[in-house]
Image (cartoon, rainbow, N blue to C red):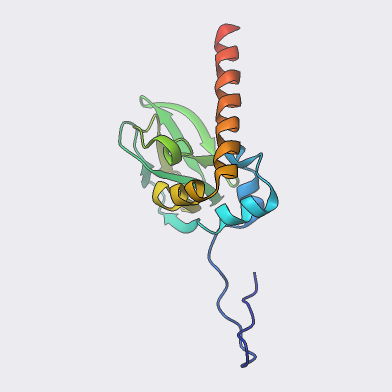
Length: 155
């Protein structure tokens, strides 16, 4: 993303940090947001890197960060049992943006990992200042809860 022109000197300012909006748009938590709302959230993301073998989040620990994978792979385990391997475009930790609860899984970098990270402390003020975003997130979470309850009932 090119920087913005600096008035009067023909130079460009550095680009504004943040995740690319098209990356954020693919996250189910943000699926109902419009382009402007996605842009606002994308600007709050920061680049985060982890080395192969590094634990990104640990099951049972407190947490308040969410990650979208740009490159590399993450292994997801619950109770030591493998559950998934996530690659570019995958994401994890989204519930921590809302409840600060204990992590339900361990996520470990299988390879060197480049991510976009968002913490509760960056996300919360954005939602508090924009009720429309908060409402859309509540609707998305309610829909996902309804889908999970339906899946459990049909077992």
